[in-house]
Length: 131
Image 1 (cartoon, rainbow, N blue to C red):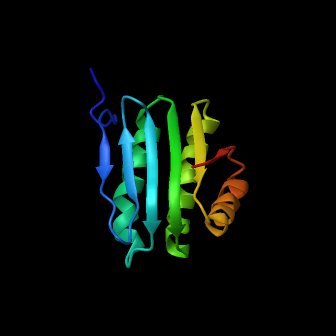
Image 2: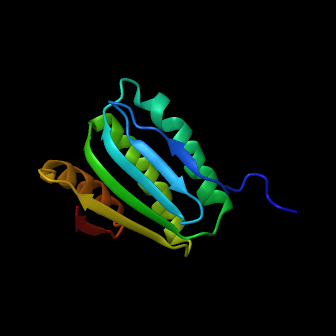
Image 3: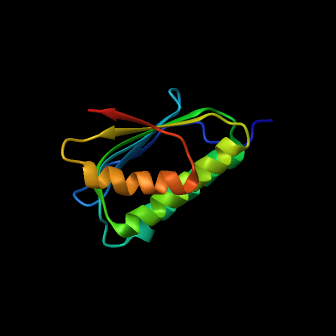
């Protein structure tokens, strides 16, 4: 019998002026963050995503490829990104494949440094590519 809680379809969260676009393409196992994130209420934006990722990592064994194509995120967004990355790190620690790539935007040095601090704190390997 198939586990009803297993994530087996795409997730699309359309970007707004103040929130990331977030896509998970199940067939490609690709989780992509793009754009900017400085929502007025970060909890309202990120909590459904955190619940979805929790379901993914608790009920799947699939490889996950994560792309960050972000321009800017504020401090409250970074706290939620840390939680997301922490869940993916735990998933990886259980022997699952997690590959993370940060696509460097033009003039994105500050954003990359902030993001790199999150990754270093988790000791999560990643690849940095120029767009």
